[in-house]
Length: 336
Image (cartoon, rainbow, N blue to C red; front, side):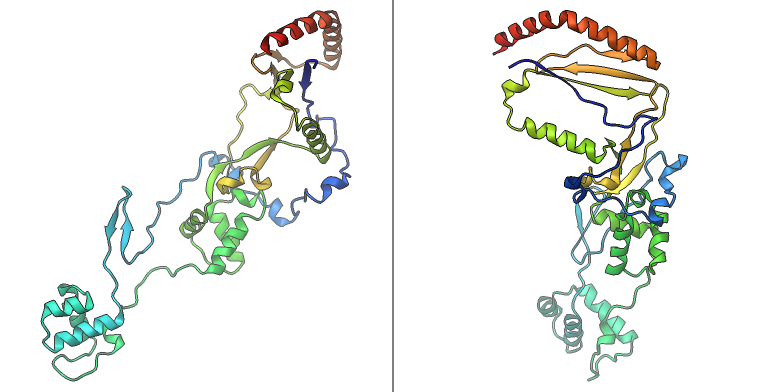
């Protein structure tokens, strides 16, 4: 098998090219375009200069538990157990009937101090001790507690829907997400939004950068892969891979962070497409199975310089092609 040289073409569009019409029926069903609505045109907070750094997440609030709670070191500490209404009434009744304290604790599972506290609370709420007065639920139930009400499932669904709407909403800040959720009829604080997203598995991550490909580009790449689907390792040893990359000297590529799950690294909403045409110079390199090829740097060239250098390379390659091919085939025999 002869050695092959694959120099992958630049599928990106240059400055003077326009994107070709997309008419491939084989890909039309699989590649749906993003919805074009007011969401896409809304400015994202993450585009501002002040958002280069990842927004600091508020400190996590520990969820309430009836048995244990997590500490900062990862250990668990016991939390007071909430006994049932029936157990509380039974404990106070037995205390009023002069039942030994050890017996009350064994039957109800409530501690000594807690039993006396429950009895004192019942008396404050109108129950009279040492009488036949019935202990009502309101005598022993927990008092209403102040604090923010828990978020409803509908509000949680609204937060997730806002964030996963498109590529722009994936970069929204907590404040902006809250404003969009409020437009849908829910009042959700920024801290609560952070809790909802993290509990759903979303975290602030850098955008995944991938080359911009048209449908024609995708079809060409798929065809190339399918033609070599059954190649063996011996076949791939005869291939030299080359590629180039654009380098922008002194340029700052702004960082953006988006909400995504670990498995959504290549979701279309969290990918920033990188297009050619603005580089200061190009870097080219090559490698084969067990060797690295030479590298080269191209400065900015005029159209005439590009033509002249291409002609020079073609002339040099034609003079060396036969000799280089013989050397390559001899080296292949040693490897095999």
